[in-house]
Each structure stands twice: as C-alpha cells, then as structure tokens.
Image 1 (tube, one colour):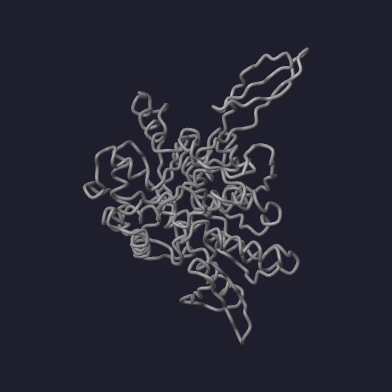
Image 2: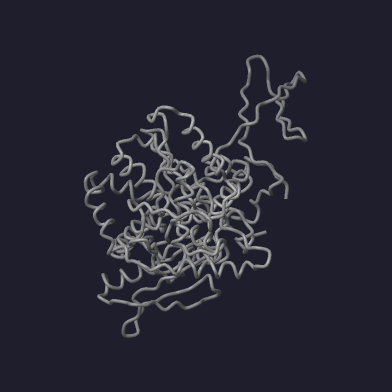
Length: 484
C-alpha cells in the first residue's frame, strides 16, 4: 500500500511501490543471489533454503553444505530490480547519526592532528524548518543554535545547502535554455524533468529506464552540489585531502542516503564519497535527546559563511516551492531570456489535486511556456503515461516523490500528540517561507566561485562537478522468489 502521509513513512512512495508486484514487506529479507560453484567430481542437485533463511548447497550424494549469505550494500540496492525498501531498512545504519558519533569519537582518540578527520555538516533549509517547528524557533535561530550544538560535539564546519542550491538553480536554468533551443531536433529534449529527488530517480531508472532518462535534468541536487564544493573547493582551500574530510548532510528525506551512495558520486582517486553520511531531521532530534539538550537552550553561534546563504545574521531562502523552487526560477529565467518577458509573480493553477499544479506563459492567445509541479507517486504515474502516449503538454516539470514535496519528507520530525500531520506541515511551510528570498543570479559569492573555482578546473571538469548521469537498470525477475 502506498502511504500518502509522508510524516508517517520513512521512504518516498516510489521506493515503496514501483509496480504492483514489487513491494517487499519489512518481514521479508532482501539478499543477493548466492553464487554456487561446481566442485570437481561433485554435481549440485539443488539449492535448499531453510525456514530461517539459511542457504544450503545439496549435492547428489545427499551431503549439505551451508552457504554464507551474501551481504548487500546500498549500491547493490540501486542495481536491484525490485523495491529496495526492506534492504534500505536493514542497511540504513551505514549512514546514521551513530556513524557520525563514531567519527567524532575517533577524532577525540587521535593525538595527532593529521590522523583526525575534518568534520563538515551541511544542513538543508527543509530540515531547519522542521526543527524550527518542533522547538518553536525561527529557521535562522535553528541555523545558529544547531551550528553551536554540532561544533560543541567536535564538528569543524557547518554549512547550508541553500547555498549549493543556488548552483543547482543556475545550472537548471542554463540546461533548460539549451534543451528548449534544440527541441525541434531532439524529441526528448523536453519536457525537462528536474532531478533533485532521489526517490524519483530510483523509480525512473528501474521502472522506465531508457525511455524516461533522456528527459531528466542532469543538474546535480543541492546535496551533491555541496558534495562537490566540500570535497573539491573546500579541500583545496584547507590544504587537506578529500579522503581526510568526513562530510555529513542533514536532509528531510531518507532517500538522500541512497543518493549519496551512488557510484557516480564516489571519488575513486581519493577512495571517498563526496557525501560520506546522510542523517535526517529526525536523527538530529535523536542526537539532541541523547545529549539531553533542547535546541531552545543552546547558546547560538555565528553561521559559517563560506558555504551559507546568509546576509548578516539572516538566513536567506529561494522563492517558489518548498522543494527548491526549481519551477519558479527556471520559468522566470526562461520567460526573460527566450521571450523578453519579465515576471514578478507566477500564477499556479491546480489541476487534478494540490500536488499537480501548472504555470503557463501566454502571449496573444498562444502558450509560450507550460510548466508543472508533479508531486507524489500517483501524479508521477500519470505524467509518465502521458509521456509514453506522446500527450504531455509540458516544457518543464518539477518532480518530487513525496506528496507536498520535500517539506513533508519521510525524514522530517513527527507531529506532537496534540498536533495533526496537516497542522505540522502547515507550520513547517510557514517557517520555511518566512526566510527572505534571494535570486541565485545575484549571489556574488556564487558568481565568484564560478570564476575562481570552476573556470580554473576547465569546462569538462566543471561539468562533472555540477552535473551527473543516470543509468537504466535492467529488470531481473529471478533474483527473488516471492509468491503473491
């Protein structure tokens, strides 16, 4: 069953359900198929699976040999043909607040500075808003108090992924213009489907493969943009190897743990990931509880300004949706650059439901641009079916797996006993949108990094740092024997 209430669910709907027959319930265990090697002089009669899940290789002479159960990693999950929810549930400890504590304790035990990790935590604006709603603070107050809390634990730098999101928005704008201009020669240039949601990406790669991937924007998400900034630019500025930096992100979504584990974001030269660990907003609350600390009682500290969207002591946000505002920024930019039309506000038209909205640009009765936000699995399915029938009217779609988007992600804090899910979500949305907005085009620090960092590494390397690629995953229906 697909859960529409994301406050009560760990993962996005598309990871819980892709086809009607690929959901693995939590009581079932996901393992790699056991590789059986034939030994000289002995032939294998069969593989036997006991009630406890143990695998035995049974030879023709009746002798049984117990086989070691194969362990799977998050990367294996991405290559699986079925739903990966159960595997995630088991393996999610690979990226957890316990892992962060392990690295913090490792640093405390090291006498030499060279043996210590440089700990960096990058916090998402959606997580700040969730914590703000829980503690009765503003998003900016959460930023300063959380910075203080984390640094008291031993974290060296605390950044804001609102800063790296400026790169994502700018690159999305540029990519859309390039796609729009070649739409007549490339039938899959449009609609451009934004790719900031890893749940949507997993679904697309596994369920629709080569058909859907050309439509998906190659621009990195804010999390992985920050991965590039920290393990490339920051590492160079600090004179440390990327391998000696432990980079943690705080996200509203469990699916982000999968995104960080993708091989595309692994630096083979340094044997390290760009994002080493992802913890959710809820896991931050666990850390506070384990330290017996309320964020309200933490003395605030100055926000690190190197990678933070901040003006003075005020945190800055981006206009548009709580999932990054991709439609808002790309639509306004495209209207100006393609048709010379400057827009102050956008008018959203609700289509089938509140998670399916449309924005159009019209002139003399003609539709110049038609954009949409499509959130939640049911709306995504409708979008894909329209694409397959060649009936999608859109130039651009902001796609998010969770109903109501990232502010309602599965990793966000849960409502209190006297609070409904709807009331909490409304409060989180209000706090998120209370931040003063800034345009990524006007961010001087971002512009300077485009010049000093990206131009210095060369065009091809810059593309690698700001973009990614996706991979169709072939279905293998024989890997799991499940009766329905």
